[in-house]
Every structure is written in structure tokens, then in C-alpha cells.
Amino acid sequence: MKLKSIFTLIVVLGSALTSQLASAQGVVNFSNTNAVSISSQAVGDEQMNLFFTTGNNAGGYTFNSFALLLAANPNAAGVQTYANLDLTYGDILNAFSGDSANHVVSATGGYDVFTPDSVDAHTSFLAANTTYEIVFFWFGGNPLNISSTDTLPTSTDGWSYGGATFPFDSSYVFNGSPVFAITATPVTAVPEPSTLALAGLACLAACWRSRK
Image (tube, rainbow, N blue to C red; front, top):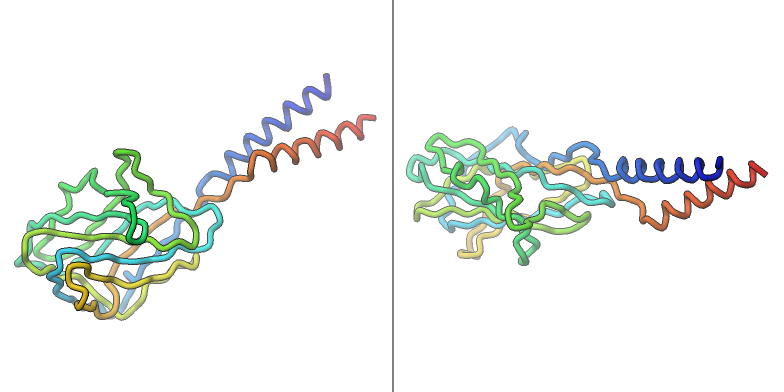
């Protein structure tokens, strides 16, 4: 009877451990929004691809938000903006489409903030040490003024910036970096079920020997 109780306790503790290890631990902010010197660049491409590589957290990350600082845009006010989270030159992971109607260019500028969309089984999971891209685009035909800085984005978790490109006009070069921020929640890796099972068996064996 005691042995059965011990085994039950091991199973319960193992489940609790799995749940605890899967929980999020803090938030990574990858940004250059604290830059001292910020200017503006007029971009007429109607699409900007912004590349970044995640840090080395073994369990990966849950993508939380992307914010891009737009400068004053009196000639493009009211133009709608969109953004996607993509694998590098690959599949769209999240189209950020759930609240796209709220994303319009302001005449006075400000942050355009996008959050993941859960529609159509889109995912917001980011693997460790993997390059992704944010595809930011707008319509309307007018150039868009995007805030820029020579300060590169940084994080405390080893993320890195891969530059901004313009697929419709490959000759265009963005001076410095757009002013942006990405927030993501590190996810702690969950041990394989076999690992937990071995740990449980080892504990059970120790308890059995002790009982004898």
C-alpha cells in the first residue's frame, strides 16, 4: 500500500514538474527604441522585410508583439498597414490580421504595434537560434516615412538584427536601422517523457531499497 502511494506521489510530482518547466519565464525585449538620435527616411517600396535571429533559449520563444516607429506622415495619413511573421523567405507563420483594421498611418507619427493572430492555426512560436523576418507593408502609392537610427537593436538574450530589405526595389538601402521593438516570452524546455519516467523509476527504486 505504501509502495502504491509512493508511486502515485511520483506521478503527481512529475506532472507538476512538467507543467512548471513548460511555463514562461520573463520577457525578452529586442529593440533600439532607447536610441538617442532618431531621424526619418522616406520609403516608397510599399514593403519592408526586417530580419532578426532569435537567442539561444533551448525551449524557444512565444512571440508577443512587434512595434515599428513611424515618423510624421502628412501625405500618407489614413493608409492601412499590415505585417506578417515569416520564416526567412518561407511560409507565413502569423499574418497579424486579427486587428488589421486598427492599423492606419498617423499624420503625426507614432508606434504601429502588431500582436499575433490565432486565426487559421497560425503560430507565434519562435525556435532558438533561428532567423525570421517581419514583413511590414502598406498601400496607397505614397512614400512612407519610417523612423531610423544608427543604434542597432539589442537584447539580453543573444538576439541579433539582420537588416532591412525592400523586395520591390533591391537598390534601396535603409540607412542604419528602423526603430522597432520585438517582445517575446522565453519558454523553458520540457524534459522528454522518457526522462521523467526514468527519474520516477530511480526514485521508486530508492524508496523500495529503503523500505527493505
